[in-house]
View 1: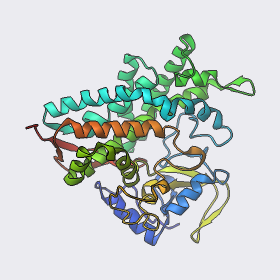
View 2: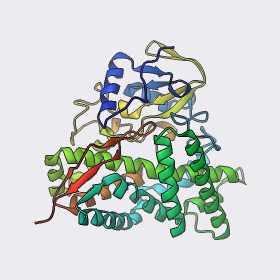
View 3: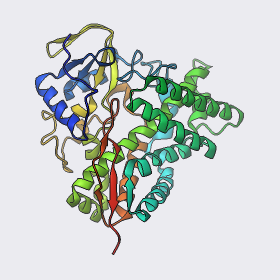
Length: 392
């Protein structure tokens, strides 16, 4: 089998996009020997089709490249329809635009507090000092976590992400187990101190029924464990990438600062340009042939959303930021099909408020050094040092 690319090669913030552009042209259905071997779909049409065809491309065998799930199945991502549906159905009402609107003033206060410290210091790392903390504090409010649980999630979530980024499988397993312990503690607390199901994710999962029977306890724990990680890492990386872009494009930064109404559409274009995941996976249940390459049944396939969203056949000037794209609905930043991100409204709220407050915190900001790139499965800024201009 051909080894078409190496996902472990050293990267800069921009280098993956150049590699993916070359693969879209030369080898849009690529294979790598890394992590035991996997395939990667680089073209928008192929990624969108595989994401929507859940009967052929299942997620229950492996949901991410590299495979980091060692400690049990975590709905909804680790299940296929119809098994995954009760878990999404329980979570979805709590993640609608209307439901999460109550969080906006809370998210805004969190952002202002974190950014005020950075501005007082003249700058810092926008990821380590800001975006790594904001989603955890936001999730704490959404999940009604205690202060002690937030502190532990902050600590373990950071260690887990470092382990994944460092390709340290032992540390990944160790911290994954700690996250499971946290999830079990949350479930146990809700059993003892129930909250209304329309106000709390864990209580909603405990109240859910399938054919009159409750959801399995370990699957509820797995769902909470999944939500804890997916909901905190992607926004952190995404905000870092936005800060890098605006640190480089001061004209756009000034334009958005002067016209706050442009922030929401700008977020959509940033999501297209800097889609924070590149390794969500599927497994074909039968041999499939895509663009004259046959992928054997049972082998992992990465749906590289970050590449699909820069496909020149779909997006004109795909590497350029454009507010006026007429086909923004073609973006696959939140996936497609039955596993399309159920938390997209919350993510959009976090990103919009974070950018509004970042722009309002100081007259301007600039990059203070080279950003550090994440590794699979995320893509974007793991670190982004910035300096803030003083108010005159």
